[in-house]
Length: 275
Image (cartoon, rainbow, N blue to C red; front, side, top):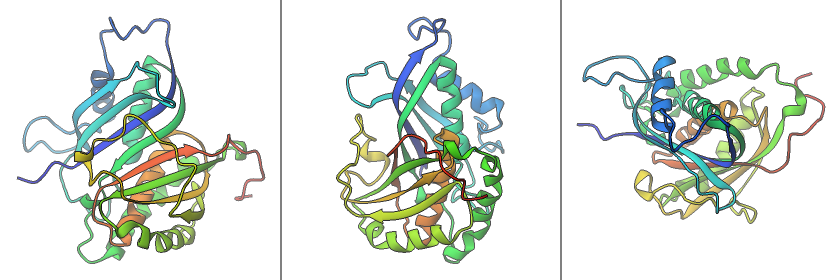
């Protein structure tokens, strides 16, 4: 039996519940809403053995109502990747639909002001039997998907801080320069990566954190990338998470990573680099 490959996402910020949605008496909760949305979009894998189709199996989800920490955790979602695992070389990790689905669920319950996202990237599930170059088709699929963001107004472009944590694995810091160089060499306009650093004194500490059993935690090795995202949305962040997973795998990283994304500034209004 192959081990379960987990994707986990936690959303942090502020949530103003809809007047008609009371989580204490509502018919649907975060788990059932995520299950229903995944099923409706064709992302939920069949519950029966040998059933094909779908991207993930549902594990768990929850809505947090304890806002004592800052930023507070709003909700969290956990799924298991469906077969085939390892993920074939022509497919990226399905992080864009995963985070988009999470955003759809929260929007059903209230109006969210997203301040941070934390995601488990199961990089170890990416198939690379013939070396990193074998995943060029997966990168091509990501580049094809950039058309969704092609006409975003330049005023939505947002400066972001993306921290990757490798836990006990020391591979990540030494791989960071090549990851930066590779990302800067890929022609796309969803994420413009400007720099990387092994020290980030401004890093945001999120509570509760992701359980260590979902990766090689606690954190010992990390790197922070800074750049500009086409828009501050779970859709764009999901694309970026999958892109960073490919960059990591290309440099020989084969363990789960934790991605933490925050805005360093509000959306900037400047000349669009594509024009």
